[in-house]
Length: 258
Length: 243
Image 1 (cartoon, rainbow over the protein chains, first blue to last red):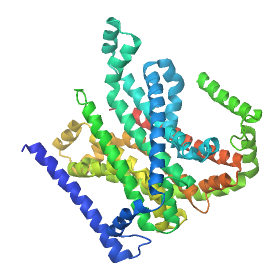
Image 2: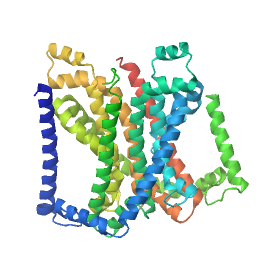
Image 3: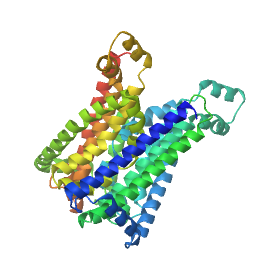
């Protein structure tokens, strides 16, 4: 075993230890100090609530609503974001006109516009995708623009010398070069889209996993709130790690990647 | 510059024209005129609700900034801490903090502290993660050089790490502040006694449409002012520290 992978294993062990210590501390705090399930249920109580959760009414339906909305918002937001980002990255005029607004709305958390979205699109499940899409759009556009801007100019010159068509240029030169940034954009777009959909569900508090949090919270069913939190966290962390893995795999052919 | 003034005026003109044309219901879009006149009539209420919001934002900033920066510098500087905690923090950052709000209400009540807790959980992770990155990306040569001159741990942190990481840290404070403001407002929107966010959700339930637009635009302008101000500060500091 090489020294490097040994060090890697030691770090993995430390991370495992931190997680175990966290769970133990949670146990001790819940069972010996707080001793009120309404405030802090211990991990085993949460596990019981987690196992019971799929049997509660509407859970499967609500999960499907949330997944549909997240998928719709993701598809809409990333595709538009990609196109606008590509235009910003490859055209100085577009960048000058659109760039400042994309940058500004990228930094302003979109959550504040939720009430306006509700006026404009209503409270229904399919309409929530617009709010998710707004979350996904700006980060996707910005990352795509950065990626498209960073293409080696020599490759562009080479493509021109070979008389590549515009389409061929985008497909064979610009896209492969900007892939890492685009994939990072995709990852953040997913996370923000998911956040947006959950927030809308919590605020409207009907139909969706996010609304379950509010419903269980209002009825002081804290173990079930924890169970829903665990499910959402599991989805978010799994998706994030999966997309990070994909980023690394798909850009490993680039020598310049760190 | 001219083009952006034209764009903003154009958007405002189209907004006003659509709102007055009757094509879109008044329950969806308020005219700018009615939003402004709402502000003129109800500004004492809005001002009264600004106070609790700003107090919550103040508490959140006082908690997030020192903890995020100090822990970020320490985790970034100590190699093992970085390699153990950065993956954990990255995973935690992927989880939207809003989902903990019902628990925060159970723990801290519907008043000030549940909003501070939410704003903290939203503002803390980007700040500590970016501070770690800022410290990690400092050229190792500077640190080795300082060590060869006989500087110890705290000397290196004070003379090398802090000055060189400052631009990154200021940049992440900027993002973190925007998150804190929105965290407080969204917390109030999801449940609370007073504050601008509570005002938004109350107006929304009572269908006081211009009221919703007025408070949302007010919060938007506060965030934009904060972002622009911090961006200006960041570029000033970057000019002073040549990298």
